[in-house]
Length: 166
Length: 258
Image (cartoon, rainbow over all chains, first blue to last red; front, side):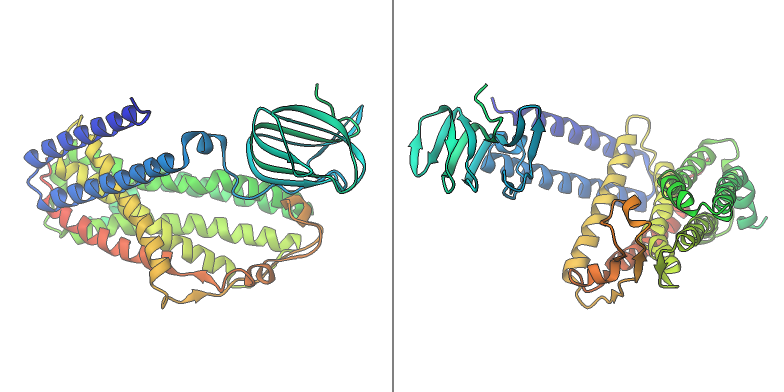
């Protein structure tokens, strides 16, 4: 049973109630303007709501509920250790962190020689164009080292002195 | 009795209350500015605008509720006067629109005065134009929608359970309204673009508004993005007001009062 079933039930009940109310009004009223206005506007509401519900159903089916629930910022995240944007400073030193439950098309070039830690649960991640197995890696990166993220889940990259796999 | 005088008398508590609130607010602002603390006055002004602007929504709600109460009350026979529906609806609409017009004019005027006292520079026509834009594009359709809602409930007699359909049709009208605005904005390219107002925020104010330090020139900033302020919402508001006014006038004559 799909997740849309209760939503469809909700809309069906709402529509039935609206039709029942329209019928009550139609039979009691003697005002044609009120009849036509109410029915036209209620129909407009039903059509717009239905179209919106259908559009969101299509969006959910095309994209998948995990992506929409997880949030799609629609733009890549820019930041690096040297300019210290998206960067935290704790007692152990500065560390630049990119963490995402799902990430794709990522690219990171080390501008300075520093510690790093790289962790992901599944997916395709390359360090200096060599594919990595899922897990956690830590070490010291040289200037010009490259991390390419094709697609990964539960991803966490830390750059800086305080980077670790803990 | 004159219908307008009757409306003014019926809603004297609402009208008097709204004007009292806005006059007290204006006096408070004047005191802050004249005390020389205009930056604080601007902060209070912007903060209280968020609370004061939606109060205008009371007017259409009260209009609809009053109609319902009158239609089901013991004096419903008074509504079957020989006057045309146009006169009844016109009096209610006119009084409500005048009240809200005065209310928002005082809000806009005092805000503009506080802003200029802080050193914000703007075109002289900006407060009046903003007021007119909002009145035609939002306030007038909302007021006539309140009257139409009250009349539909009286004429259609949806009953207790069937109020749902009246609510659904009101939502439908909002959907149609939004659709018309978006369609007119996209399709009707011949509609004039209103000029972008000149609005310069001085350096001492900008950080408090969350803007980058330095003089902010709104016109220079916006000119690179848009050609002008779209006028489609004004025309759609006008169209909607006229259409709903005619519907309300017809409904009035079809309602079985009493």
